[in-house]
Length: 322
Image (cartoon, rainbow, N blue to C red; front, side):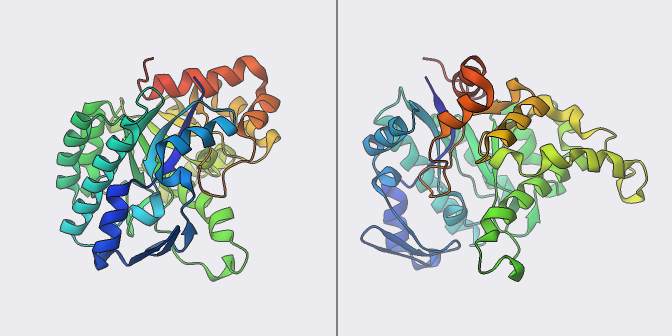
């Protein structure tokens, strides 16, 4: 089975909550999602209908997906703890129902209220009991960074539970130079992913949690191209005196999706981080998703390696047994 490890949906329970609670600052007009902490986009059928989602996957040469809720619109780390927990509970119950329509082809990742780390840990246990196979968190918790001590309990919990953590860009600092060319997504998301990952490395989160498994989106941002710069800077900058000597040493704990939009870049990614650490990802149904993800992968690495990346690696990472 060809599995998309970076895939999104918005279940009906979430839409109901958004329609009826103004704290989330969203309006749903027909198939339009308006406002919130991301902006406006169209709810194509694949967002809300599990059968339409399978048809969408098949149109891209894929068979199944590990589904998470739309990240930037639905993280809601900036609201109070009660509202944040309500959104996460609606998300998790909704995704369990959504994927339960086709359980042989759809699995799901939990959302947890990271603005309240103790409640986030408690909800992880609930989500595992409900059938989640991973957890999605933002690169920034409404301005707080994932390597801060307040999140140490979260990292310990996901390690204990054996849950992969998908770190997705969120809460980017506004940058006027990104306007009006959509560079907040084209560049900003990659910078944010790189920042989050390199901070985890520098803070030795992977050292303290050797069984931690992290999936970074958009091919890891600039990390596969810039980790050498971090390693070099460690040799001559006092700010990095306590950081690990070699960021590449943590590759066995880090997975990268295939979203490069460029065959040569994808080929380099696989060569640099290793076949075993790359999984198929698309970002569907967002419009940034590659038009032909399997063609790009096949052209980059050939059919034998493409099978490992699209089938074997996602199944192993998420414990997907046929």
